[in-house]
Length: 113
Image 1: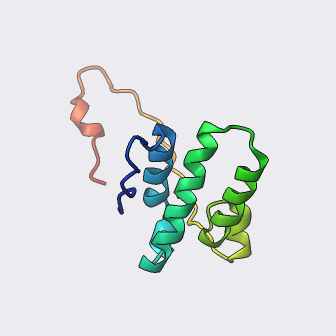
Image 2: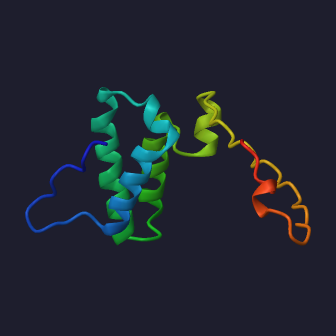
């Protein structure tokens, strides 16, 4: 995972921006990103960071949307890019447990999976 660029003197990345950055690089979309995308994603991080300090600023929200489109960061963007995320497989249904007969060895219920 790339690290956030060093902040300017006297300025620190907002904690929510740090979380956003980590989640971005842990997401399935990260596998589709290449080195050349990093500078644009760093610019996006800068705008995301400023949006935390200026909540409700429509210009920042619009800029975030515009900058994130090429990276598939929203369901609509992924649809435009014709990207899909593999759906998680459903958990196997639990088998009902059989009651253990009085005096029976409880290990008799164990099965190799």
